[in-house]
Image 1: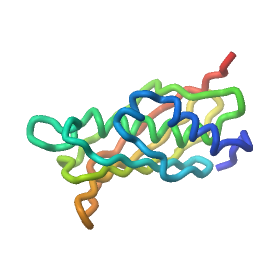
Image 2: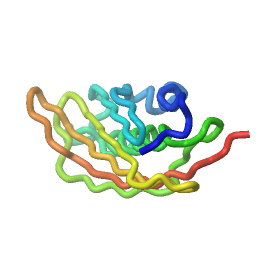
Image 3: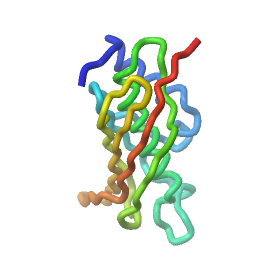
Image 4: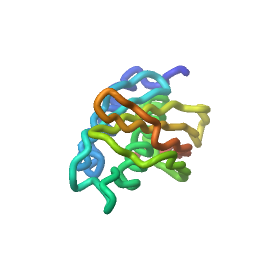
Length: 143
């Protein structure tokens, strides 16, 4: 995939730096390449649901925001992205001390950018995919 903005890395970094809720969750950017983004977070006790699994809302936010990071690497300077739709499949309970997400753009459209994101739970040396999402993002010109 070809980036439109030579400062695409900075644009993706700013997407993460300016987002209060993902920051509150502890999301960290781990990878930025044209059409690709990686992130992770360390699970906290307040992020667990009633059965001590990492809450689905935390997983969904990680997938959505990381997909946005992947899309952000391909838009022009002065543009941003907004999620317009996403579907997520939870494959197994998320057990572990960390979550890792990898997202990639499926097609770089002029107005819509569909992406996919995979979320993994890491428990010691063991890593298992716990969710897969398809996220569609709209390209928005900032004024």
